[in-house]
Structure formats: C-alpha cells, structure tokens
Image (cartoon, rainbow, N blue to C red; front, top):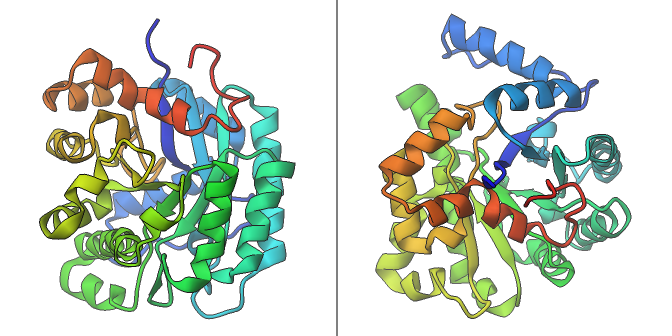
Length: 320
C-alpha cells in the first residue's frame, strides 16, 4: 500500500479573523489568489476539498501567533484569544478524523503561560503538537522566556513546528528585493531560531525535544555544519532531533536536506495554501529528481510525520 501523504505545513484561519490585505508589491494575479486562499483557510471542509484534489491524505494544520495577531510583536500575550483559537482547531480535527491534525498555537515568548497552554492543548484538546514563531520583536526562539514552552513540549513528547516570521529588517528587505526579500528575511529568522538553540545548548539540554523548521531556513544547516554542529544534526542517539520540511518542492533543496539530516528527518510540507501545493505529480517529481530511493520517498511522503505525531495519532490514516 502506498504511504499516505501527510502535509506537515498547512494553515487555517478562524472564520471571524480578518483576511490580511495582500502586500502592495504582489501582482494582480497573486492578489486574487491570496483572497481566494483566505476563503479556503476559513473552512475545514474547503481545506479537505482542495486536499482531495491534490491527493493529500492528511493536513497538519497550524496558525502561528504572529500570523493570527498583527500586533504580536508589540502587545502582551493574547492568552485567551490563543485558547479560543486552539479550541476551534481541536473541533475541526475532531470533526474530520483521518483528514486533519492540529498543531496548537502557542506564544513561546510568554514564559510559563506558554507552557501551560502546551499542557492544555495536548492533554485536554488532544492536539498533536505545537506551532511557535521563530522570533518576537527580534527576540529569537531559544531565549530564556521560551524555554518553558520547549521543555513542556519535550516532556509531553510532541513536536514543535517553528514557523518563519518577520523581523525589524523586513521593511528594508522588501524595499530592496520585494517578495524575494520578504521570504529571505523570514527564512533568516527561521534559521537563526535553530542556531539560537544550538548556541544556547538547548538541543543537548532539553532531552527529547523534537523540532521542525522550514526550507526557508535551510541556510542555517550550512552554518551549523561548517562551524560545529554537523555531527549533532544527524545524531541518532535521541539528541538533536532536528527536522526540516520540503516547502517549495525543489529537488536540489530536498536532496541537500537529506544529505545533511538523513531521509528520516525530512517531512513533506507545502505551506498550504500560500505556496505550491503538495500535489501527487509535484511531490513525485521532486522526490524522483532528488535521487531518493522508494523507501526514503515513503518516509518523506508521510512515514516521518506519522512517527513524529505518534503521541496523539487518532486522526492519522489507518495505513500510516
């Protein structure tokens, strides 16, 4: 039986959440697509319809706090709003077993309040992991206030998805390089989050921390490997459980990720619906051109995600 396709990097939004206006630099066609995406994101049923058309068996949905709250960097943690968001997500997962899984939104920069929401989301709502932001107001994941959230996720044995975010550099990057500059800046934040964890020794100190980054942050692997972390990135002794997604489905990027981390640390992820989707043909083409064996392809398509999400696996396809 073919390994079910599990997309680790997919999004949603609450129906009453205002759709963000498309940036000024995008084309008219991209603007139209973004407005259409906003409608899809607001309906779990529509997400499944699009998934059916793409051939995706399970979407792992998340909505990082910086994407939900436009003032995330400047106001105190919006703890009740985050609780309501996670309640809504848990309801969607319960209503669509086998098709949707959820990563709870957590403000990792909220100290012990962040850890408390991890516990509630996992133990009471039965969500499969958490999503956190790479940075908040230029303070990066790994800072002392984020440690309680990371420690609680490790204690509960659930993965932490680290989502890219903007920083104070973002306006200048956009002015110089438009959409490419914006994406590169978000990747910079994502990569620095990984380097922060390495620099502070948290991947050694927090036993069992399973953490997922996106292809936007791929440059951090080169920096880490060049300086001192090459062996740790692919450690098989339970430490340094660093994973990356395949966002973008570029065969060369996929091949590089596998060469550094091993096929068992690379996860299918599309950034649904904002980037190209994980359609059957696109995924097959990327994995074939990356030169991967059928066994390694099966791991990336869904086997790795199924293993990573084992604590709350009830909604996974039976064959996973």
